[in-house]
Length: 223
Image (cartoon, rainbow, N blue to C red; front, top):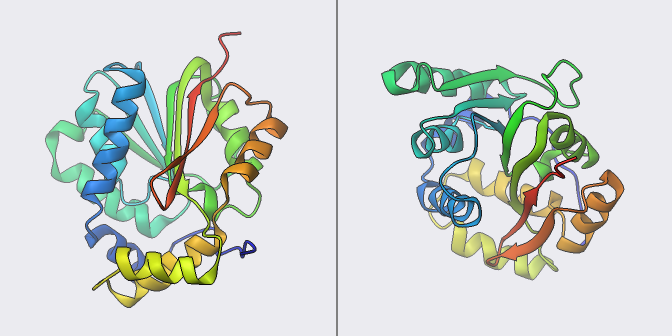
């Protein structure tokens, strides 16, 4: 199945609210567990969550790594409005979490300061994938932890329909539509390997993660 791009920003209020109310707890926790299994209990003092949406992963990172400042970046104001309301609702996040609206690529980001860069389901939104990989290089310090999880494009329309039937059973129509569009816009492992080679990120490894995800993980070079 050929890739079909979708809109880069998810900025409709109803769309943002649907994602905020959806139950992604299991897959979100699985990502945190993968990070801990690969990189241990310390990600350094500055974690960046690229494409943070309503903050699900951002807050989990803050709770798992209480010694870190976690910065969530997203281009969608509707998503960040929900994320900021969540942050304000919990005193433990007031100092540990920050959000900022940023449309990538963005030169106005503090370069080389992130000790870890995490991204969940941003890559497939980008029409040019190098925007993500160059931002990872821009933000990450020497030896920074990198964990990028994204959807893996199905091989056929039939495989896509099967994933929808399992993963979106009973979900609101807006989520079903967005999920189908996201699967069509996602990349395959071999495509991401080529992207990393072009970006000069050969220290990062690409692997399938279950039937619907791929993961890119590793550390930036020390020098």
